Each structure stands twice: as structure tokens, then as C-alpha cells.
Amino acid sequence: MENSHLHFNTSIGIKKPENIRNKQQACPFCERDQLTDLIAVDGPIILLKNKYPVLENAYQTVLIETDDCHGELSTYPKEHLHRLIRFGIKHWLDLEETGRYRSVIFFKNHGPLSGGTLAHPHMQIIGLDDIDYKERDSHEMFNGIVIAEKDSVRFTLSTKPRVGFYEFNIEMEDSSYQEGFSEYLQIAVHYILNHFPFKATSYNLFFHHIDNKIYAKVVSRFVTTPLYIGYGIPQVPNNLEWMAEEVKRIYY
Ligand SMILES: [Zn+2]
Image (spheres, protein in one colour):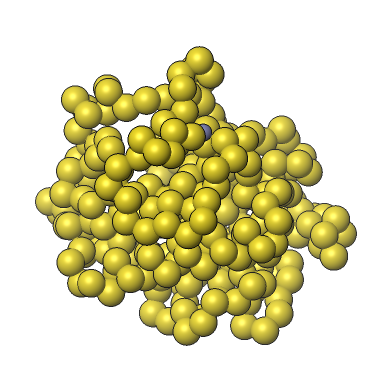
């Protein structure tokens, strides 16, 4: 029970730059020659230690996706998309492999309702000393209506969403990188930002490594439902079949 919560350091939190709402604030990720504690670099892609490690008992890193402050995952050319996701998955699994952490999380926030603070496209890889996220995971969380499938890669719309409403899942084996994985990921994000039936500005991307599977969950973000906040009850909308067909119609 004692390891059920991640502790947030408010004195660091208060110093953290924020420019999603306050556009005046300069972008720290654009000043590339000022960046310190670099871990790995691949062209415009940089992995570095987080300068504002707000989480206690955690090793926090930031993955800067591109040198274009206004870039976005849904519009990256294929070459950059694969370079980025390959790089991210490699460093995430490498950190997991060290065995230094109970578990390692890899995720992305985008937009004002995502919980993110900086607009410049980035992801985070965080080693947790005391918490194993996998204890809360099951393969079932990533089941859903199949939108597309090729080789061993599968793209679904959740029928058992974790928090509620629309969650896209992409899965592949952890033995080798499959381009289809990132291509489905990009379609999910593009659909949310451009074709969603409700105007969506925000999403999160969460990677999970369970047994020999790698999953990505793409979650469109709106105001969280009170039933989830108050009682932990996720809600499932009654138009999932329609949405799955709609994604197929637009992209295939
Ligand atoms: Zn920037």
C-alpha cells in the first residue's frame, strides 16, 4: 500500500517553465546549445535528464522529438516518425533492462488538457524506484474493435477503456521494431486532432511493456468525467463501432 502514490515535489514544480498557456515564455528546448545532461542524441532528437525532476524516487528524462518547436507527431514525415519511435523505444527498454527501477514509464502529453507544460514536442521516460506500473496493467486493457492489422501489429479502439471514452491501442511483439506500429500511432493521433466528432486539442500517449508485448495507448483528452474522478468508474460510449469504421474510411 505504501507504494501506491508517486510523490510530487512542489518546490521544484513551482519553478518549472510553462508555455502551453503562457505563450510569452521562451522555449527552453529551442535553445539547444544551452541544454545540459544529454544522454543520447540522434540528429534533431535529444534524450536528456529532466532539469525539473518533480517526482520523488524517480529518474526523470525528457526526449525532445525535433528541433521544430511547432512540429507535431501527427505530421512528421515517415522517416522522422520511425527514427523517433525507434529511438524512444530503444532507450525506454534499455533503461528497463538495467534493472535499477521497479518499472520504467514512457509517455507523451500534447495540448492544454494533457497535463503537459511545454509546447515543444517531447516525450518522457521515467524510471520509478518504488512503483511497478505493470501491477495495474492487463492485456485486456488493450483489447478493442480492430481497425487495422498487419504482420503482428494491431490497431484497435478500446472496448474496455481505462479512464473512459475513446482510447486507441496499438500493439506489437517486443522482439523487433515494426514500422506499422508507429504508422498506426500516427493515424490515431491525426484522427484525434483532425477528425474527432468533438473538437480535440489534447492527447496522451502511454507505452506499456507487458510480457513480450509492447502496447501504445493513445487517449484523447477532455475534461475527465466526474464518475471516474469520484468513483473510479470508466464509461464506454455507444458509438465505438461507428468510430472504428470512420477511421478505416478516412485512412484506408
Ligand atoms: Zn521550442
